[in-house]
Amino acid sequence: MTSAVFKTIRMLEEARLHFFIERTRPDSIRLSVTMVGERVEIDIFEDDHLEISRFFGDEKGGRRNRITCECIKSS
Image 1 (tube, rainbow, N blue to C red):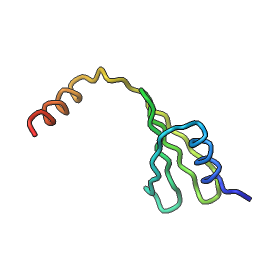
Image 2: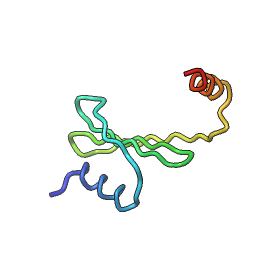
Image 3: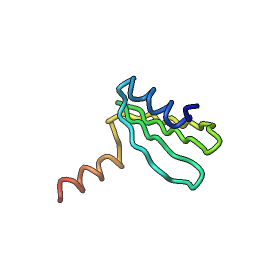
């Protein structure tokens, strides 16, 4: 039997999506998927259940983006 971790990784690889594997909790592994305008966090738990969070954004930024750009320019 294949675990949910490997099934999910295979699915992401077949879709050619870039992801990071993270360990942020003792009972799960997180796959952080990055796409243009969206980030998805897939938490896979020991019992193979998944929790998925989606975050949307764009490059327009705002105050936070200006501060980041200023920091990069000054380095």
